[in-house]
Length: 164
Image: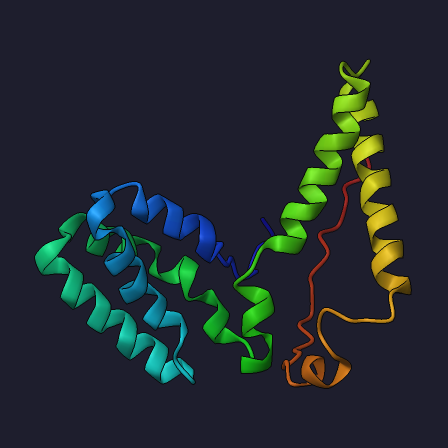
């Protein structure tokens, strides 16, 4: 994980974790209630609905309410970005696709002679993926929506290396 980076938990995987803790008969109802959090038009309403859902589930499914509270920052991280980015951010499909490709390629090799060999192969897969995305006509985020992000140029202090 990168220092200072937002961490968005995959909604689908979170929902699977939640539903594994409720009786099958209650699953559709709990899932529908939780999905209302993500159907809100803006950040203010997302947080208001989140608190309402937690309040509702505290009575009937206290464990689920606790799961929601403990995962709040991770499942609502998308709110810190422009609304045009929300759909892409709360889905981790591109990351899962890259991980699947790395796994596919490493499974072919089987056993690596060294950790460095594994890193070289994984790095090569990532470079290939970057080249594919770079050359694609379609962008995951449009240039217009990327301009909505605020960029701050912070001065980074580079520590001096002591000559030994």
